[in-house]
Image (cartoon, rainbow, N blue to C red; front, side, top):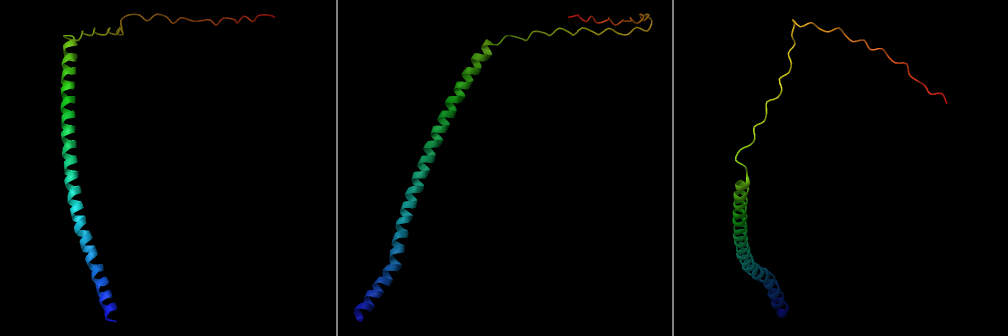
Length: 108
């Protein structure tokens, strides 16, 4: 009877100790993951900044070449033709009467 009592107390105690040991290991894994994540984010930021800088340099060079090839100024646009104005003193011509033609129907 005494053996079973010790056996149950051992099992009962181990049930409480095992989770605490496992969580202690999880903390170490979490710390390792956090440091890994920070390292990866830092490397990504450095990569992104370098790529952005290279792209900005490329754009500056491209715009300099573009500005060098542009003309000095735009040609001036000619003024539109001014519309004729109605003159009240000028006589109005008589309307032209149009007579309709007789349609020709071919005989088959």
